[in-house]
Length: 316
Image (cartoon, rainbow, N blue to C red; front, side, top):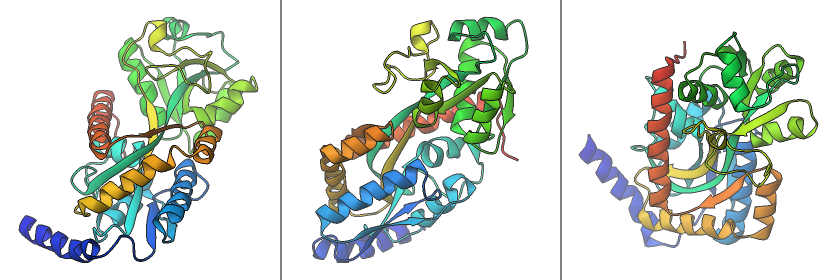
């Protein structure tokens, strides 16, 4: 079977290598609904590649099952450079440890191209509580039951708090919601006391004074919230929960095509208009080599699998 796959890959590669790439429309599969961050960044990448590649690059939304439907479609596509996938912390970081029967392998079935942008999780506290810091949260969690919400069981917002719980050695009671908006409303009303979300979802309510931000789950402070200390600065190391969105292709896509696409993404991220768009979304541009992105994905899979296993998180 492996030999057959290799031979098919070589045969698919021959037309791509015999003439300049691309010679027809390229599609980028976005495994989430239109309007979400992955879709917005996917369309940004598509627009920029259309300008620089000389061929139309379109976005095809294939949402469902936490991104696994679209990812599976991309994994099974011909590895010729004409089907790409916007990959995320959900599809290529968390999913491998969360779903025992995931229909694709992020490392085996895909070739990483480039990481586009990062946005860390922010730990937020309800204004109905008297908790004002990570240290105060830990202290109170040792004396009473505290409820925290998330956008769903196994979501990044859920696992970020599970990571904090493990690092601090505390108990918090999980209340899953159908989405970030529902969880945020529960936080503002005081139905829950704690919620983690990425900067794009947190920055508005925090600046409006509707919730309190007490820490950022990253190694450094964010340029979008420079006055907010990291969780590590408050004495709790090892809580690093950073959302990310990048670009990948089916495994077996010819190396020259992958290198070309990586170079185009790197060039795109230097464009002032692109940087301004990412800034408006509270994403920090990344770029980097294909090897760096591959290693990054491998590290993310290992990190989140450990969190999931230690927390006993299961999807019914």
